[in-house]
Amino acid sequence: MPFSSFGLSSALLRAVADKAYSRPTPIQLAALPPALVGRDLLASAQTGSGKTVAFALPVLQRLAQNASTQPRSLRALILVPTRELAAQVGEEIRALGAHLASPMKVSIVFGGVSINPQMMRLRGGTDIMVATPGRLIDLIAHNALTLSSVTTLVLDEADRLFDLGFAEELSRILALLPVQRQNLFFSATFPPAVQTLAQTLLRDPVRITVASEPESAPDIVQRVIEVDVGRRTQLLLHLIKLNHWSRVLVFVATKHAAEMVADKLRKRRINAEPFHGNLSQGKRTQVLADFKASRLKVVIATDVAARGLDIAQLPVVVNYDLPRSALDYTHRIGRTGRAGERGIALSFVSADSDAHLRLIEKNHGLSLPREQVEGFELTPGVAPGLPESPANGGIKGRRPSKKDKLRAAAAAQTRR
Ligand code: AMP
Image (cartoon, rainbow, N blue to C red; front, side, top):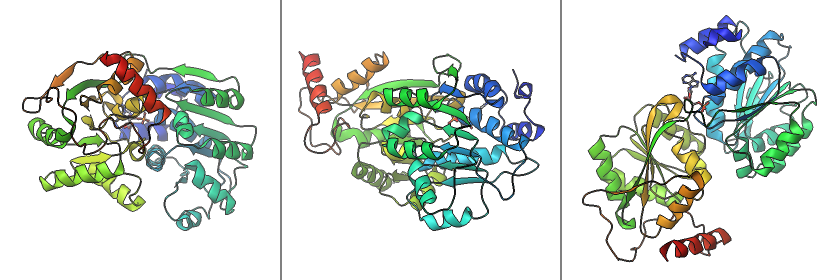
């Protein structure tokens, strides 16, 4: 079924053609018809499935059909969990709306940067806003906008909005929205908080689940390489050179590790930069732009900073440190193999992080074979050396948390 069969305006079809999207992805096929007629949606969709286009096209089409008000008033509000996702979603909407006869103003707002320029840009009003919840509330508090004319609310990556602690901000925002509106709700997972919100928020929603269909499942080869903790950077270097990887996203557990590994790679003349929450927004934007433009070969990122990154043709993701949770594992490996492209997700595992990986595998119903790379084999029977960063990537701070104790107990059981 081509994009032209949904009754989209010629301006939107032109933009879809500009983007070279030849046919809709499964989430787009399922979401476009009901969203275009104003129904609420409850969509289970993974990052990389094409969900942004699935809500952006109906939002643009419906807004364009209903003549714009003068001055502009905010009619579509899209809430996202991170700054990077805000920028990506906003840019996608701008591109898709590029040929509309009366152009839409799309505002992108997020925290971590000065609020004043954002307030200035909102002076003439806006039609569409892509926002992180905290900054949106700040802007409302500064009287920079109101939500009283919103007709469509999109929650993108709702599970991560909760993961990142935005529950309170969300309920404050929801209380300010008009009751009559369309709600488009996208989430990769449905923990209880998300389910409760969906129940209270949505009216007779069309439920969509496409993640498990083979067509939409990202084509990701998952591999596990055993390596001693202290040799991971050397192995990474070796693999980058051996495989001639052009672009690699490497996940580490801490900001410190991100700095340190990037530093070591640079010393070996590999163009690498860290990417974590302590960097200024300007620096993060620069790193991302350099990475996208292939001026940068390796980005060493922490989970929070890397959430929602969308980089086309990212062939390899490396878990230098294992993620804390099975959900984070999904989010991390979802950075590669986007929209039908092939990707490799490599996880480094050492003697003492293997049990943690087993828990992640169990959670996903996986059993990944352990590989070793010649020259980097695990040292048998040797207690792990001083780690460059925590070997399991999952233990915050010095004192073990409840989860850490559970993991340790599971590890002890596996060893028995
Ligand atoms: P998303 O799930 O929205 O993060 O989208 C993931 C990637 O898929 C983005 O890079 C989009 O540009 C791309 N994409 C979205 N729709 C299509 C389509 N119909 N065909 C090919 N690529 C697409």
